[in-house]
Image (cartoon, rainbow, N blue to C red; front, side, top):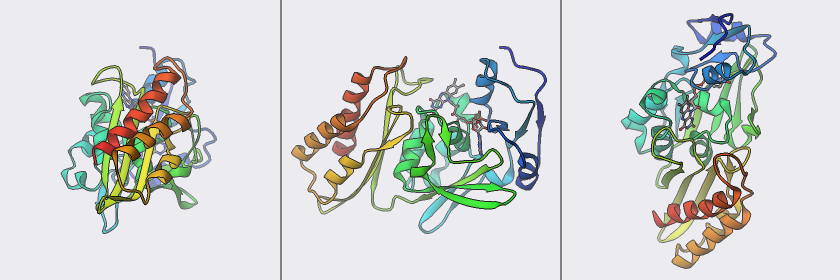
Length: 283
Ligand SMILES: Cc1cc2nc3c(=O)[nH]c(=O)nc-3n(C[C@H](O)[C@H](O)[C@H](O)COP(=O)(O)OP(=O)(O)OC[C@H]3O[C@@H](n4cnc5c(N)ncnc54)[C@H](O)[C@@H]3O)c2cc1C
């Protein structure tokens, strides 16, 4: 592995200090969290910055707080911490399940939720689970903080609504309440597999009828996507085998899958429908 030895990595002790170091930065990518994406990119020939700011272990980014209606998950929370944080399992099970599929134990111990979201890979496993929560991202800079709804956060391939001087501080995620959540990932094998397609869903059923539905797919398009046509089909309907067939077919008809080294568009289209069927049959 070749890593340039000339990166000046600064280690602030507080968020305020990190924001001061980031102020005036013109390009993204100098924020180093767990480094599991960034170090690989630097070692694979991506332009290395002259300096970077480590936000690993910043206390302000490391907490999970449970409020009445939502959970605030710090951007620096690792996948291993999410996976093992029993108190949040019943509130955000899809996110916990997604975190538990990332890489293997070593990557989960180091990779962070903020890094997964900010890296903005279409194959970022936590993105669909974040999307179906209907939550938002909290960003801080020296000029203050702002909130971006997650459905507007990923703007294009590998692009997010964040400025170079902004740090993602946390994700504010509504608790699922009486809805059911599901996360399924299709990869080549069970560990260390980058997704071909993954799906997260949050669906509420009252007396056999769907009252709310959020279904999102990842690895299928340049950004994670909500299946709004399928969601609209489901809401207000009784969940029957015929409706599940229709939802599967509609998913396959409406997705616009990418074709790349991990999978073909045809396979992704077929698998999208099967993942929708899986989520609905699981209800
Ligand atoms: C062997 C291996 C297997 C992997 N398997 C998977 C997998 O199965 N699924 C998957 O989704 N990913 C996988 N990854 C990718 C990676 O581990 C995850 O995306 C991880 O969550 C990245 O987090 P990090 O803290 O290491 O980010 P870093 O590498 O530190 O940063 C990634 C990007 O996010 C930015 N960033 C980080 N934190 C913030 C913040 N708080 N605010 C603003 N910008 C920020 C950085 O500047 C950088 O641009 C794998 C990686 C490896 C090496």
